[in-house]
Amino acid sequence: MARKVFYSFHFDNDNWRVGQVRNIGAVEGDKPVNGNKWEDVKSKSDSTIKTWIDDNLKDKSCLIVLIGEKTSERKWVNYEINRAWELGKAVCGIYIHKLEDVLGNQSSKGKNPLASHLPIFESTYSTSKYVYDDIKNNIAELVEDAIKVRSRY
Image (tube, rainbow, N blue to C red; front, top):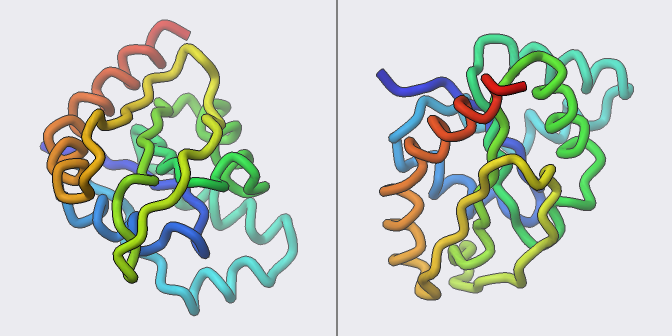
């Protein structure tokens, strides 16, 4: 049975790349949030946004941070990382900058927003198709590794 995960990412920059990872299907991710829903949620108060994030983390075993060029700079990504850890969830990361966006562009590698003891996957490939396949072949194991790391803390 696939693990239930919550994806954390920079919506404006990486939504297309995130969609590719969600479509892999190796883990059971949260339903994609369409732009209108996120625009509605993010226009609310900080406490409403925190409640929305907390509600989405409740039944998940792992938070996967999809790391793009500016992910580490995002206030809510950092909240999701800290909150997931507080709630006893496993946390891991996947670099997605080498996946192409809707226009066929890759982006620059972003800074790692995770603590050094948390597992992160970065494909050694440079072509988007191979990067996608590499993520697909490794995402389930990454989540299991994150769960093992979490059990030690």
